Image (cartoon, rainbow, N blue to C red; front, side, top):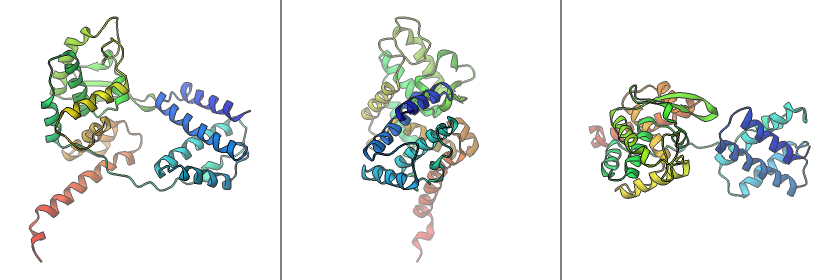
Length: 297
């Protein structure tokens, strides 16, 4: 089989069998077709790759100025793809299993203080139906810590206003329940009062655009960016910053790491542990700033 055939079959497998998200599949597709181009340039057979060939590929990625994090992602994509080739019995062994990912230095996530969150929320107007929706969306992302893609896919049936909870479909179609407080509940109630003004036909999704269609991930990112630009906050903030902020504020106020992991929908606790570094670093800074020992020689 030609490599493009097996790649397309593999992507179809991710979509239909493993129920991966569209974004994840697009990432695999980019990685694998870049690999295909590398093989073509170097006249290599994808079924007869050796360790030297892989080292050459890693050098190729390095020359493209890819970060260690991106290179690690490429290796993970290829590891999964070659596992698939083993299952198809096109190869006997997955050589990528013996290739270690480059070391990735984790950067502490950017987050907002409670004062900054309040400042942004208080600066938002609710004079139009769009502004009511946008404020609700911002409050929901901060109050639940859900991903932008998850917010886009919330359906009316997923929302339980009485119990202040939402059923969310996360990565790999894994379902979880997230919760919100009274301010978010009020914003949701206000939005639901004007939601029908957006609609032209029946729509199952909670957040809708001006044409009555589902509010896309890109539209949500644009809305959050617009909200931030109208505030006095000057440092760079993305919708994912609200997810980081949600986790940081929970830990700062005494939540245990396992609970935060489940609310975020992290498969691995190690992914959640990065937020403990934020809290620890702030404690260290507070100690160095305020403890009288710093004034003693």
